[in-house]
Amino acid sequence: MLPELHPGDMDALLFDWDGTLVDTQRANYRAMAEALAVEGVRLEQEWFDARTGLSSAEMIRLLARERELDLRRPVEEIVADRDERFLRTAHEIRLHTEVEAVVSAFHRRLPMAVASGGARRVIETTLRHLPIRHRFTTLVTRDDVEKGKPAPDIFLRAADVLGVSPARCTVYEDSDEGMAAACAAGMAVIDVRPFTRRHGGWGPRCHSRPPT
Image 1 (tube, rainbow, N blue to C red):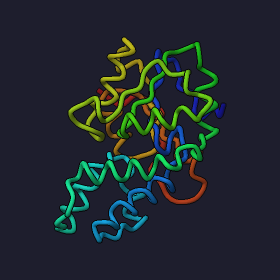
Image 2: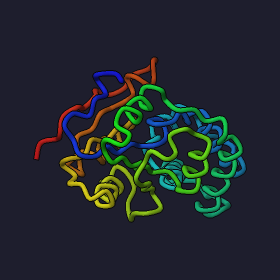
Image 3: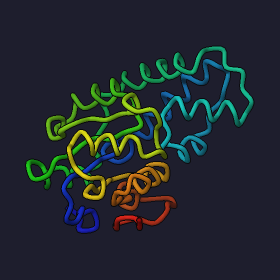
């Protein structure tokens, strides 16, 4: 395990899913772009990449507001279409080895949760193809809370299910929205992007608990 990814003296670890535990960026973009193409909407990868911390529904609603789109299908139907397209390639998804090493190092030592803005069905289906599927105590998704990231709800729900104080949790994230959510929850957060994405520009890593 890379020393920069060590969680410190904490009681629980929370992992974002897309882009943190698993390399789904290309598959997620392709699925969303294809679903929106049915609406006659062209989705640029640069726009998508800058908003990966949002759930699919929130991303579509933001795109519709920004471009004043009149979508033919309800957002929920477009999301379902996107999910079905993604699931066709779920067996091809691979882990980010740098973050998998953290999961392996703390398996049976600390409770761990997947805490994601993604859909439960999509994550559970993809997990079945991965060797880490039995290493998490719980899975909390956008389906389980009122507000997605950057609101802290997903992380707070995960901490509650694990029975651990938010201040004793370390979060692993790869998006600005996710890091904001972790800070809003009063949790320490580590930005995995410098280790999982070798090219491009990202914000600074955050290793310490945010000030209260």
